[in-house]
Amino acid sequence: MSDVKLFSPITLKGVAARNPIAVSPMCQYQSVDGSPTDWHFVHMGRYAVGGAGIVFYEETAVELRGRKTPRCAALFDDGQIPEYRRIAELVRSLGAVPAIQLGHSGGRGSERGPLDGRKPLTEKDADSGWEPWEAVSSSAVQLRKGSPIPRTMDLKDIQQVIEAFADSALRALQAGFEIIEIHGAHGYLIQQFLSPVVNRRKDAYGGSLAGRMRFALEVTEAVRAVWPADKPLFFRISVLDGKGGLWSLDDSIELARNLQARGVDLIDCSSGGLLGDSAMPEVPRVPAYHAPYAQRIKDATGMLTMAPGLITGAWQAENLLRQGCVDLIGMARELMFNADWPVHAARELGVENYLQLFPAEFVPRLQGREEQVGMAKNKVGVPMPCGVTEYL
Image (tube, rainbow, N blue to C red):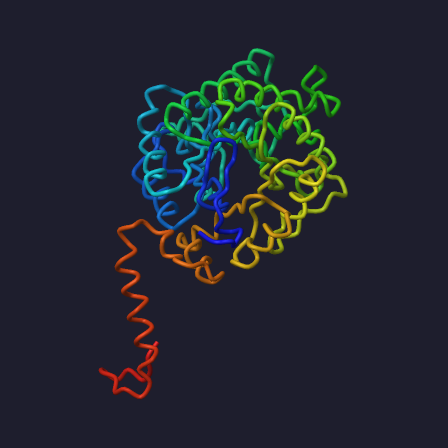
């Protein structure tokens, strides 16, 4: 479409996207028994209509106990495949690449959603159909004040979850998704194994950095084994735990190197999720606040990177790509606020035929609108109706 990097096509293995704008996963808490609803159909469709290159479905648990709330997404049964396929086909039909993030909440399971303060489910909730369940984690460590202490996973649990990741990946493939991202960030199960804030294990899945990485690497191996070699595999990490945490950028670089060796194509750089008592500060929430970490990982490993976090401006995103900080621009809340942001950004960056980012059905009418807007701006001094004092 142009020589503007933000609106140049990008190829990731055998998958071609019209541009490097990736809609990051955004949990909607509108699923029914883990499956998509009309809400998701509209939610995903609006980003594909707006011109993004890659559209991620929300974080999707690989088993029911891996959900955060009873209304979270999950892909655990073959019978769900047609419902997820409907989402993937819609996104693809609108010109974007359908992608999905697979994860597991671990000790953060069995709670209410953000509108209810993420309060733990209780037996009283069972009366309204929201029966609490036993959460599991790397260790029996309370993750949030007032929440139940999760059960320590034994080796059987660990193997079950690893197999569940692989099974969900196969279902995602059958549903037509073209990119998978493994969610290893934000305080959920994989990070609960990675970080010594939570992981107190004395076996092969704890202790040293190599031990704490083992679960993440075995999940990755299992997913990569069933995910086609020509399709990209992403991995989202928290580059730092959060305020007072113990997982560092150096740890993230070492993890990235190990993930790369197991077939991960891109590191999606986020932060936070686990709090501790160390001197580690919180990552400051400034514009593009994850980009410097993404560049460090990119420089150290040569891997592709993506970094969400307060990327709101067209030139801001363009310069991140030009400077080589990231390869994909991850966006979530800004697109939630303005799903047509890619089209407006293309216009700001001087992309010719920027309206072509919209579906073809939009283009003739919007081209006519552009012409009429231009004509109206030239009608200086022409009498105006209904008390209007000036044109556009």
